[in-house]
Amino acid sequence: MKKHLLFALLVPYFAFTQEVALLNTDSILTVLEGEIAIREAYVQKKLATLDAYKSSLSKSTSLTDKYKACWHIVDQYKSFQYDSAFFYSLKLSDLAYQIGSFECIQTARIKTAFVLESGGLLKEAADTLEAVDLTNMPDSIRSEFYSVTTRLYDFMAYFVKDFYYAKIYQQRSRDYMNRELALHSPSSLRSHFIRIQINQAEGDFEETERVYLSMVKNFNLTHHQLAMRSYDMGVVFDEKFPEKAIYYKALSAINDIRGAVKENVSMRELAESLFRKGDLRRSSLFIKQALDDANFYSSRLRKVEVSDILPIIEGKQYQELESRNTRVISYSYIITLLVLFLALFLFIIFRQLSKLRISKRSLDTANESLFNANHKLEESNKIKEAYIGQFFNLISEHLFKTEKLVTSINRKLSQRKFDDLSEITDNINSFKERELLYKNFDDMFLNLFPDFIEKLNGLLKANDQLDPHMKLLTPEIRIYALLRLGINDNNQIARLLNYSINTIYTYKTRLKNKAIDPETFEESIIEI
Image (cartoon, rainbow, N blue to C red; front, side, top):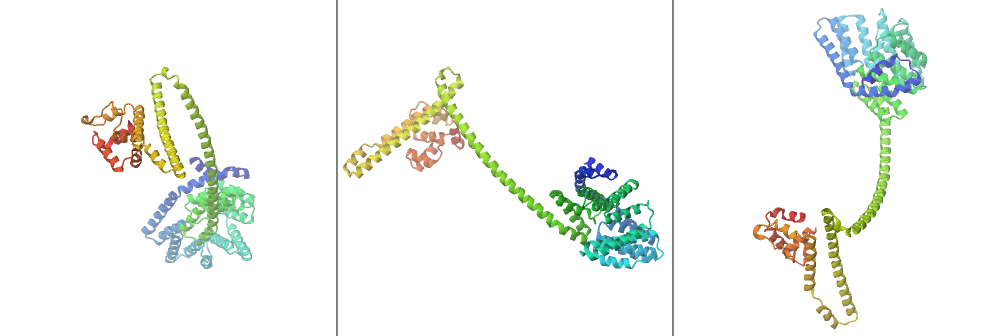
């Protein structure tokens, strides 16, 4: 930030070519963004200055001292806040009449006219200037009168929206500039100001820049003075050298902020220039700042100017945002498809790798006797997998028998051999089949978890221990064996064991009550 601030302070002293402006535009816009971020500090400094003058006004006892303090207050407020500027300009006029000084009265009228112009009350400003009497007035007051009148006709030419009258007002503006120029020495600061304005109005950008650089080199300018003349430079370069125009308008806007000038043009025109260039982010930032300034100053003219361009910039930015969102959504769809294809590709690869690993395990099984304890543990895991597979094979075989039996019954029914049905049903011993199923389940489960009973005893109270050598499981233990296998739905367990739901709850509660910690009993079973 310090580098950018130093750059902004030094740039007026450089010889500006079109190429240099092109190189420096982005840097000075960055400086401007930084100044916007700290603009409140400059406002507070301005308010502190105003407080000092107001204190002097209230404490002064002589009308002359009060007039001087009030003059400074109007000078500070005139480009800062319209309502206050107008209030103190009226107070300045009142003090001038109290003093009875003809010169002070004319000065107060000129100050009031300037404030009215800034507030957009052009007719009232013209009437006030009409009342000014320059008889025997010094050149300093004549110069200020011509300057304020020039400004009035510039405003009228800008807002009349009629080519015929605009030309008339522009000519009157130049007439008053020439009158003022005749009052000053060619080497004076005011002469430089006026010549820049005249050359700018005539579109002579080379002479405008020459005078500008001479002025910056030879005079110690205030922020407000540098802002005004830099704006003139931006206007003169607008058509032929837009980048250079942006540079000078940015320089003007920076000095407006540093001088706490709220009645300004540079920020709005800079936003328009950047909008035409396609820099929507900065143009939106600067037009909003211009609107803040116009609202703070309470300038009707500036509010109208900003309101003309603000919806266009914001609308374009909204369109750009919508377009960007559309692109993001499109990119998201593409990325999602790519991710899905990648996931599918990885799935196929992992499945092939899984098949390769299974094949490798099958080959390793033949050499298990040579492995260490970890390999034996792996062998045990494979055996468990094999038993689980066998258990499901038994279930499949049982289903096959059932389907075969159903087929046989259907055949007898279709052949109307009803007497043979009793022979088929006599051969069915469902109790024996279920007992065989339980035995096969118990054998396979205890082979899978040979230490299940031992670890289960570790969860039970000492006087409720189970036989560690049991070969067949009790109904209670069989329920928790299914729970250990991951079957935790009571309805499913009831269907598998051919019990009612209430019986399942009874058996589970009976064994749980024997546990050392009934609350964590089922969780402990799952971890065996």
